[in-house]
Length: 265
Length: 269
Picture 1 (cartoon, rainbow over the protein chains, first blue to last red):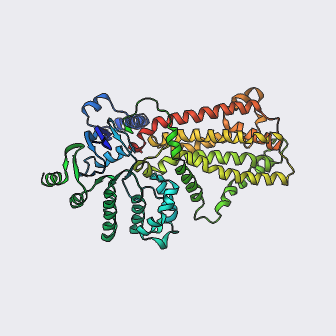
Picture 2 (picture 1 turned 180 degrees about the vertical axis):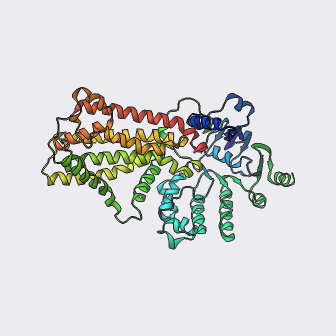
Picture 3 (picture 1 turned 90 degrees about the horizontal axis):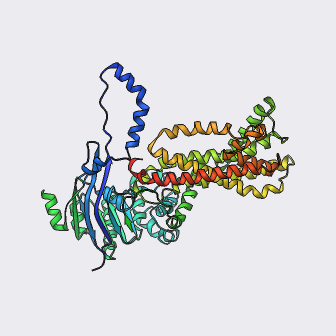
């Protein structure tokens, strides 16, 4: 059997929460605190990116593990659904796999070109026109100028915004904006595509269109990781699934089995 | 590719940077397009500011305070310094703020973060060259002709870009953690302006302090520019050399600091 395209080994990510200190009790204490504020602020800001050995081993009051020792493998052509409640670590996982942030511990091996859609329109600039934004956000997502040029018409047709190509996107309706953002993203051709909940946008017809596009993507043998709270879509789209809860991997396996357990837990 | 926590010093991945050069091109184009969009004066803004500053300086610093100008008509003397200073101040400010402005991009999409602060430093060059063309026109008007040393101007421009990018990289990386930077930058630049030979010639600084004065890379840029174009003083090799060295140090240390800080940008910005 071929090597997995994604191999995550004990991935962990730790964030600092930033607890508020206690309130001063006396006037004298309040004044002293006021004077020492810069020193305390500096210490607090420096601590943001520094973790003590204790915190890294056992955790502490002021830290949270968004992911803790999560290991899984994805093979080429798999469509993997990721389920879990809010704060389960799904988006953190995507951020690590797409290199937006680095893990605190563990490692992941990626074989192939990977694109991540954490949020439609993140690469857009409101002042630029639709046409300019297609080029800019395409480049931000890793497309070459040539690729964007050849797909330009297809993107415009998919988004149904032909008339507004030269209007700044800040004047777009929110539906138009989202359609264009998704159209650019879905026309990427990575080997591995991470999609986070972006389907929860647009009207029903557009959602169906997007789903169709993702399905045809999967049929071409590309690997897809898909986060959604909509278990119906996951069941419809994915072959396998993993379930995350509070940063830990609860279970990985065939999609029906995982979804059933997730829905009944 | 393996993703793991990075430890210690990191080299800059030149191969990866190279593969993102098209993105750099798009970012620079965006920066230039956006600067004057939905404005009335548009590209004229590039010259409006240095032009009026030049008039103010000519009236107050030149005619009233009677500061020396190495024998050059005041308008040309001031405008030649203003174009370099406008580039420097603009690039440092925009570079320094660039990460915070692009917060959403940084926390959602991966690409080499270095491109973000470098973009304003490159985009600012267009303004610089346009203002430079205006300066050439003024020189013609006053019958001032460049010396043969004008061949060294690209070298001066390089010092200017490296120094501005270096400071910009530091400020940008610091601003992710310490928002004080946004408040500090205008103040820092105000002090810096008076530490540079803009409203006065470098020849006013006592000779024994000149090398010390040249540690400020803007000194080398402006003195070199004035000497080469206006023939104010013999070409100041020693000043240029010191300024070139400091600009290199600023740029390289800026890169190193940025590279170190980059790993936590998405987490705390």
